Image 1 (cartoon, one colour):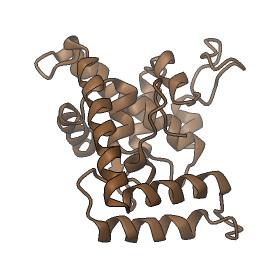
Image 2: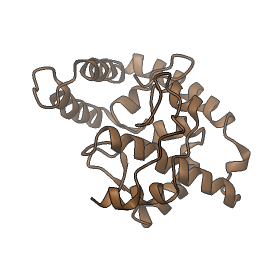
Image 3: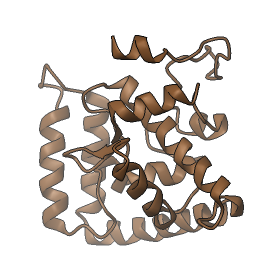
Length: 210
């Protein structure tokens, strides 16, 4: 479930929507995702995801409930902004590099979990990196221009084959364990308690190309 430490569930992220999405867009995206994850779909059905999607649509389709949710969303977003590390500001080359590596690492894990559709929304990246979405615009633009990430049909960002090579060339993942555990995301090579297994290295370039 897309939930932070305070128990906040981001319904916009569940439906992969912008907070500015209108009712028509919400309905259209909901129908698409509901069809994909409906339990009767024997290929991509997922009862848990379907339940979350239905709950998100119920809240966001009701004007009063959406207004109340938007207030919580803004409060949660403010806390993310306050937690932004000043050393990662756009005027810091070292900070930019950490953000680049963080994005690639998270998208690498997502692609490893689902090779065909593995991706993340900008809001989820914002939360995991502790970096406001507006500060990520430069970094995602750069990574897309380099061909290391791409935007999927559903609007999420995903790592490309060149991006995987970049992660491998860097000899590992740049991850904040606490943030990963908060979102119940585990690296592909992890111990049972969710911590990185330092004894396992990523595949080398020859293995990746094979």
